[in-house]
Image 1 (cartoon, rainbow, N blue to C red):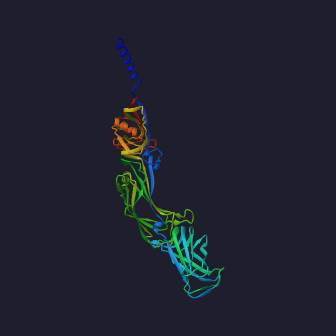
Image 2: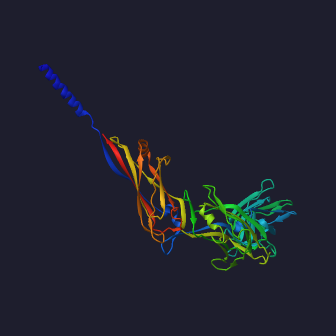
Image 3: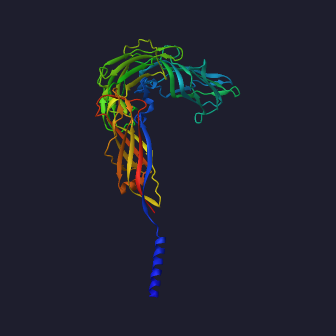
Length: 526
């Protein structure tokens, strides 16, 4: 009996010790704030296109260049090589300092498109001059481009070239920057166009010896005009047709909108042509359309301007700064005279144009005094303005927020609910979408949300008088919780709808929607 009691006591002590060393576990409920963000109109539209009206409502004001017609559009001065070879016609004896060759030459520049220039001011470019000497004594060459002056001084190269033979001529190569040079392109007698005048003089080196110059020996000049960019030119540009397009230009207003449609109350678009070129112009717009490359939607402008000639007068020179007085042409496109609203409502990111241009439709009425400055083109612009007053269908704002659910080895979420508190200051109902992203911004999954966010309270003018708070609950499965642990970012998509209020609704600068995301989690604590 005594032995039995002792055994029972030892067993009790052993069991008590085992229980003392086991780690206890229990479940606790914890409410944890996870995300706090505010969405406003800047998530939908860039601030650069938004302006505030006097009543604090917002409007979109955007201007984009369609195309410019400048010097390069009208013609080019191509790289031009001028070769001049002097072959000694008779045997000569030349003493030091004797000039044995002097010649003026006219050389034609191959200006493109039949343009006839009488004057050019050069912004940048080079002349490369090469000289080859067969004569058996050093030769001093002076090479001038009489047509080229800078601050009144003629472009001149004076260099001494080594003696040579027909098999191994003396050689010189020089590169001259002709930036800021003026070119008179009217030739020796001032009655030509596109014509350079050069002067080459060769004499025996004054420090050399008397030399026999034999018949057939040569002095060769190669003058190459390279990479010439004119700042200003004058002449007759011809009566020529140019076509611009079909080409596209960017339309950067709606890049942040990822989904939805709108019906805009009013649109005011000015299509403007501003002519800084000294030519009369006639334009015909064959096509003008907007394109949404994300979904393939496109719309072509329907207006009397399409296919009709537009005459624009030439600009005039001021002989001051700025150098020209622009002439302008404007055409207003509104919802009552066109379908311009359709072009805007598809949220385009490109503008496609196809335009014909005829310059000097009435011939050379300027007397060869057409002109163009590099920085004063013929500009075509589209100026868009419309109030943010619309009917919205699934118009979607998007925001990406950082997210990190700490994972501790001693505790883990076993179940829970994600509560979203949305304080809506927009006069629209909204649906919410959440997409989880990993550390590389790759999508993990979307969390389904069944309820919607109620519209703000509005007054008789459909202006928000007070915000409305909605609470959305998302039950989380064990798989959802594991995905939350993996997530490093959350995309919040808010889609607005005015289907319950089909009237046009203005957007004001203080409108926003604040979203708080709170987790009600059951943790298992070890």
